[in-house]
Length: 499
Image (cartoon, rainbow, N blue to C red):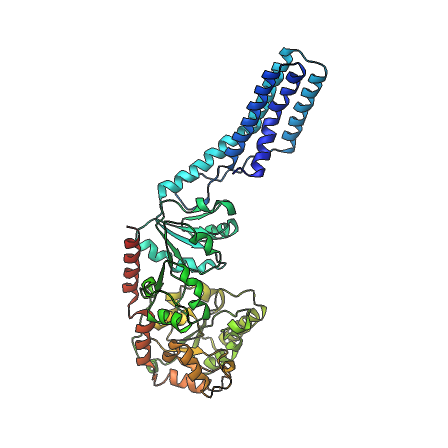
């Protein structure tokens, strides 16, 4: 179907030729006039179809043209020329112009239309070059993305690259494409417009990996002939990790049995055949603990809270307790690394709390000279590097907790909101928390009133009685696989899936 904009453009292009039929009609040359008019209409439709010929947005691919040529338009000057030609033809008809003049006006109309349509040639050539570059690259793996915080993509692309399979990131719209293509170095595409989703998946794609369970993924999932695989962006006990909407994917890659059990516990019935346990490839560069925490004279502690959700019932962040937690660590003489969550920047109260934590750490640096890490420097540091530089971590119910479990180092989790749940339950906050979050059985639980914070920290950095529990939960959450084993398992899955 030709768009209204292209039809309008084609009409403007063909109008000079169509106008030249007017004096022919006035002169009684009906057959010639109809022929000229028919040619003009056919030219308008053909030009409109060519203008609608398009290709996806694409970047970071070889053989792409230097720039994307804009669709042809009719300028005000062009419209003025067309109207002038129309007036001339009307005047010629009014004065019964001779055949020789009518013939000249036909040539003028044809020439004017061709001149106006000239940009169409470079436009079509440009789009063909883009399509050809995509066809030659022939990606077999796609990473569709309809989320807003695209840091999820680099969590998986290093391991996709290990498969040596050509891949492409597919942004859901042009706005995301512009941002992502300027930041990521991966091959990337996006639909030229919302009605051209079908063009966005190259015919060569065999597997689509979804790192985010966005509602708009439905548009990608409608694409037939592709194995749609949900990989997610973290092994987390958050409610969204067991959403019924995850059942819409063909395959669900799970780090361990914990992810599978999480769906059952939430009452979400998914066929067992959909799950594939692969561990966490992202832990491949994490170093494991080499000594008891008690042997570290001044343990380095990573505080990495999750982002504060705008909806209160979904907010699992401890960032509003962060000042007190960091202050307790500083009083104990610890070196603190504070790494905020990249998401949630729309929460003004959360941002204010983060600024207060940063200021607290900066003041301690000025007073003691200790080499804490915070702010932009902490965000720019690779996750593996910051994990390896730490001796222990404090976090919330978040995927980063399961990732840190791969290091087997002491881990504490803040039981945000747990006290408010089931108020008639006589169990302690810690018991409630561990009943809901199996990972909490391997973590020291910091209750939201912070009354037991000092005692919890003494246990964590002293006898460390949860050392064995961390090994058990590593098997449950991460399949008992090392990072290297997980990466190999993931690569094998990809290579097998595209055969």
